[in-house]
Length: 358
Image (cartoon, rainbow, N blue to C red; front, side):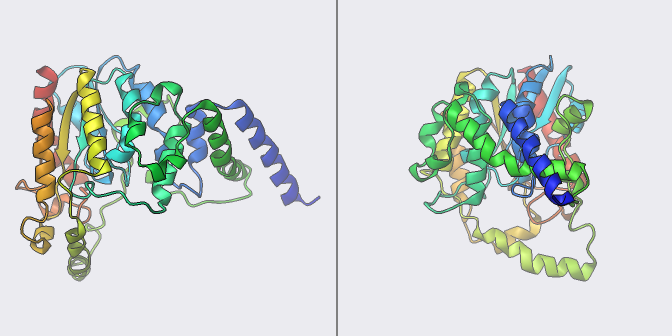
């Protein structure tokens, strides 16, 4: 038998043993960090909430898409806050929306969270269609395979019929999904450890080991990629503006009636009914974007916010149309960079202080 064949057999057997004895998410999220999913961050939700539930502090959690992910520096918010013994956690995920995030609401409610920041954006209020989506399949599969029976609540009713095939709603289905979705990833990890395969892993995509100090730091201040705009020459920047800024004109948010709206209503009603404070956050876009928009193009976003604010006892922070956001604050057309996170921190701190003290 060849050395490579022996190694592959060894790793396969070892992986089978791991899968056979592993049912906890604290191991599964590491196994998800493979070539199929590429970013282990998608598996951190339930481990992170377990950690947060034990922090013996006032806990603020941010959930949303990459725009919120690149806006929230929990370390800055903690150091700037006037409210003693408060921790701020960034649990936002690239590509996420309330239609995905609603699955974690039951666990948030049971995790001693005091305040939740929920992103509401012009890019998130769209109609879900009956078509194949690798991203949705990944999210529904990963989240539900790491859940327990206690996490299966009314959010299931919001999931559209053609997406329910990706849900794992009982322990048998969850075990099956963990076996299918972690086997290949575990082999890659083990082969890397013994030197048979090298993989390029971007630093910002790495997830620290659970319950280490690095893990706790990561939940407050994840590793962000460098700014795209900062590294450009003037000519490159002009070309980028011409090619990329017009893409925001494709955001045409619905005022109501979509599954994303239903998910928002579910999130807010469940959290507020549980006594958890909610702040809705609309994030800024690069100032060059607005010249490409039609008049009233983002009114559906404003109408959504108005309805949510009138229906629920929530605060709303509007940065999408607010002034003072400059080129230096952005990594690209709709994500903040280091300077932008500082600006966001300075603007959000007094709002969060007031909410926590109220």
